[in-house]
Each structure stands twice: as C-alpha cells, then as structure tokens.
Length: 147
Image (cartoon, rainbow, N blue to C red):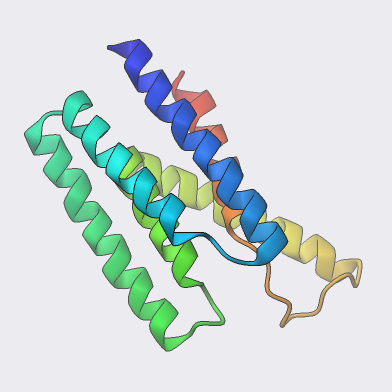
C-alpha cells in the first residue's frame, strides 16, 4: 500500500512540474490536464483512502474551489482560475494538513522571490508572477517531509 501512495504522490509531482512549466511559459494552466489529473486523483483516492476520507477530501476541494473561485472572480489580478483549480486538485490529493502545509510554503516562497525581484528592480508591484511553480515547491517540501 505504501508503494501505491508514493506512486500517487510522484504522479502528482510530475503533473505539477508540467503545469508549472506551462504556467511560466504561457501564463496558463491547461484545463484538460487538470481534468484528467482530477479523474485520476479521484479514482486513486477511492482506492487508497476509503469512503469517509474520500468524502472529507471532496468537501475540502469544494471549499477551496468556492472560496478561491470567488476571489478569482471578483479580483482576477490576485489569482487566476487555473491556480484555483490546481489548488483544488492539491487539496483533494493531500487533504487539509497537506494542503495547508503546501499552500504555506508556496505563499512564503512566492513572497520571498517577489520581494527579491522587487528589490532587484526586475519587476514592479503590478507584474503578475506564475504561482504554480511555488505550489510545486511546496508539494515537494511536503512530500519530502512525510517520506
């Protein structure tokens, strides 16, 4: 069973690396990749967790999509809908503890990198920065911490 969890996590990391690459190059996160990843995660989660934990992860995902989706809808300059959907996928895959850990690391790293780029005058305060790479770093730190 432990090997299955590692395979699940490794596939999630590969997906996040691809989404980070597309986010940095094209400033978009492809819906098709998110949809296929969501189906895979949902099916593998049903196999790995059991019904009760699967439902907890599903409700967490709904909360993430609702809360961050409303922010993205009202203030699209703050967060893109691709990031919202990726965060929903991570919430479902990791559960509340893993999601909060990953999100905390991602936000801290995004803050530090943005601050450095501002100080070096590479960007200004209105320059958008892709968030998926920071989520991938947070996911890696979380995964290395639980192994």
